[in-house]
Amino acid sequence: MTDNKDLEAEIHPLRNEDQKSQENLGNQLKNEENLKSKPLQHRRLSRCRTVAFFLSLFICLFVVFIASFIIPCPDRPSSQGTWRLDYNAAVPYDFLAVRDVNKDKIQDVLFLYKNTNSTNNFTRSCAHEGFSTPCAFVAAVSGANGSVLWERPVAQDVALVKCAMPQQSNSEVSSACILVGRLGSVIAVNLFTGETLWSHSSSLGGNASILSPLLQVPDIDSDGAPDLMILSREGQEVSGAIYSGSTGYQIGHRGSLGVDGDGDALLHVTRTGAHYILLPCANTLCGFSMKGLYERVTGKEGQFKEDSYWENMLNSSAHRRLLHSSGAVRYLMNVPGKAGQDVLLVSSEACMLLDGQDLMPRWTLGATQVLRKPILGHYKPDTLAVVIENGTSIDRQILLLDLSTGSMLWSQPLPGLPGSPASTSLMTADHRSAFFFWGLHELVSTNEMDPQDTQHSLYMFHPTLPGILLELANVSANIVAFDATLFEPSRHAAYVLLTGPATSDMPGLVSVTKHRVRDLVPGSRVISLGEGTSDSDQAIRDRFSRLRYRSEV
Image 1 (cartoon, helix red, strand yellow):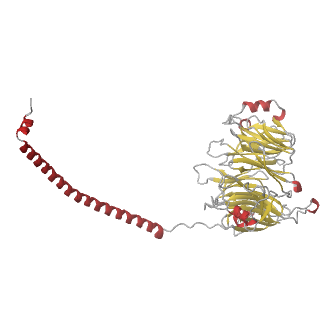
Image 2 (cartoon, helix red, strand yellow):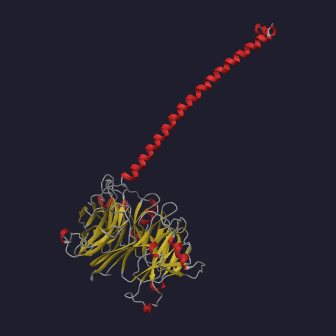
Image 3 (tube, one colour):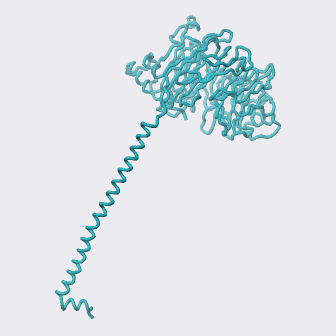
């Protein structure tokens, strides 16, 4: 059956077409009206967008104008490449520290000297602090221009010093310098102002000698600051005392370690988190647990742990011996290992890397006569190397060893005087290190060598040029302390020299000097080590000038 509409369309086809055309015409008129109304809406929206754009642009330009021309920009402190500060009739201590004291983002220099009065318009004298003259002063000097930031007398004589010791987290003072006097006094000085935070006398006996260094131990009294431990030797016995890092008060009493060791002590943490004091004892390595010392001096249990493996080693030997050495133990160092701290032990006959847990040798370098404590650096990118100065005086050799394997990376004969400063290293942007060595200016025979007339020369070495040494400077004065550091992050490296009389019996001129490394390169002397290079001396200097330095994380 057909639908009515279809039937009508069949009967009246023209009427149906006319109806469709009328419907299409109506739809077309509606579309035209819509098209006419849309441009009006678009015009209104575009006008609003234009006004909003120019308004935001005006606001941005106004803010830039205010920030650039009306609000003054803080002046960046200018850092001089070279400066020098002199003290007359003084004697320096073998101590240099580099910290940002005045918070200008440029590292400053802290040092110690002995004098009658302070200089540079500072009025504090030894008498003001109750000391007889001369006494020990600590001074902070601006790394930017060498001006004295503060200085003050701290002790009659200083035995140990450690700077940048953290204080309580809720305190306005975030760090301090801790100084231990020869007679046992302990004083904390505000790193930023030089004011005394606390001062106490110790319980040392009259015949006791203080052992170095000043050890920092975990927070025992739960006051938010690491605590301090001072070791001393009286007769054949070594004892230790623990002091609060925030107040300076002694925790408990002095306790014996039961060993007759001597030399620089080391605080070592085993893989299990137990703290042990390591101490050279002639041809052996002695050890004592912090847990045992704490219980001995306080009579109660503390937060420290003991390592069962280490306790078995100590209990099975007489006089708490951990390891027998082929020669007298001279230096101990904590170094990064695969799973924690390892121990680098230097004796009079060998140098060895010990596993930090079982003390088994990882590698041994025999037939050595190490001149001083080794330093660490990077010969290959991000790979630690150890610098060993082997031999003394005219037969000294600089050895760079891979720390993990003990393999030789670089060696070079570099004669030096017995009192020459220690070497140091600075990380460069290519994740290697620039090394700085002191040696003789010219090679002379032992009979011709006179310490009074011979100049010290500072040599610079970078692993990308293994056949080159750059002689940066020559110094004829007696060098007491030396350090190379990055004074401004990613800007310039410089070295600091502390020179002065060799003995306290003859006070004289004490000088603190800073030299920017990059400024010394153009006038340096290029020394070829025999591994020929096609580059000219100027091209080599240019390569050293382009070195960029970075802070070690």
